[in-house]
Image 1 (cartoon, rainbow, N blue to C red):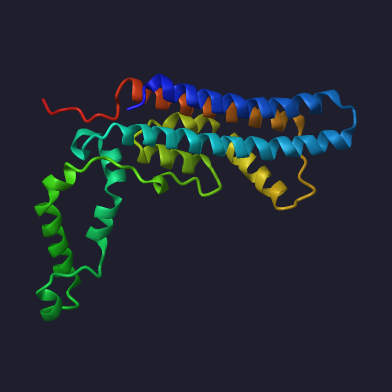
Image 2 (cartoon, rainbow, N blue to C red; image 1 turned 60 degrees about the vertical axis):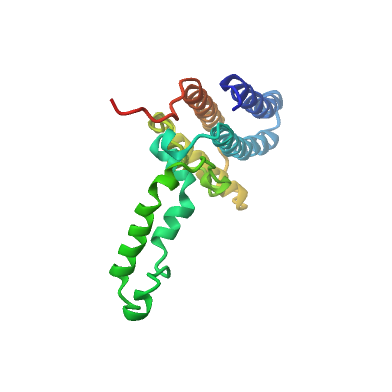
Length: 231
């Protein structure tokens, strides 16, 4: 398994390069006296800030899941969210209404309750084997939906067993950033974010990125992903 420090440095390098690009545009905007150029640059900063916020969060969360996968731990050794993320195919089979008991599929073909019970029996029969399965969180466990709202970010963090509530103080600003980005990206020429708007967006985006990075490092460093043994 990669060390927490190595994962942190990967995230740090990615985040720093993204922030540098945004700061470069901000610096150019601050030095021009042309109002049309300032408006164009502010619009560009909004689009870039959102893009880098989404890109970094996906990169960081993927780095975390990859680090967990590389540990080769069994499902019964990790916290519930990570085990659940690794067992999506097992749960999909449990919910598959087309999977029926081999004998009763002919006698009671349409008895959904009976066939659900049969799937539950099969699941419990294999539970020990299932929980000994090595954790392999699939790539699609992290999905930003190309619209990284605060709730989408929190959902992804929750599904990986990470703390997500500290995102809330930035929720309003991030939602406004997302809305402005969508308007600009979809060709709304009238959307002109102010200098103050842009400053709020970049500040919140940077703080959220730092929080996500710190939360992932702390989880790896403190081994928060490991299931605590019952006393």
